[in-house]
Image: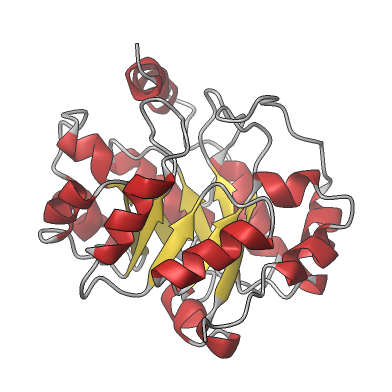
Length: 263
């Protein structure tokens, strides 16, 4: 059984709980600023986004160090983060829409609502949390996991003033992108079925990205080496989570990911 096959029924049970939206305001104030603008205006054309997460199922040790929010933000700020991401997935990740909302209230940076989105109620949760963008995953459509087309989920998000970051893994998934009104795109180096890093697949996906911009590298960043690989492949920035959480000096680690433009 693949990771998504196991996870998504648990996600469905969680979002179907009557208390899923409990604690979120009907109309959030403030709202986070534009993630797309933050990426396109990043220094030297290279954006670094930092993710708040508590579990990393693809890692050898899934549990991550517990970092208080103020320390997380201090590390992100000292490291010059251009934007933030926060897991809203409870199963396997211990995330929550409430934590996304707390992050929005505590920072002036753009915030990505990161979840395995299968239903419009998660779009509503992203809206109420105040997030500037929501992650939609092409693999959920190409793999037959969605009852609602990803195109409709994207339209629902943009109608609520939420930007869409569309994630792909292999080059065939760019066909999904043709029908989705996305503001940003990301290539996940990790296969969501096996949770294995597949660098060759990701490189090919970057090579076939075409006009899909701005384009981020997602997952698998533990050093400047991986950051440089993404930049060499043509990414406009990256998202890092586990490496940041495990760094002894998160701010200094983040600064090492400011890799120069390939000469």
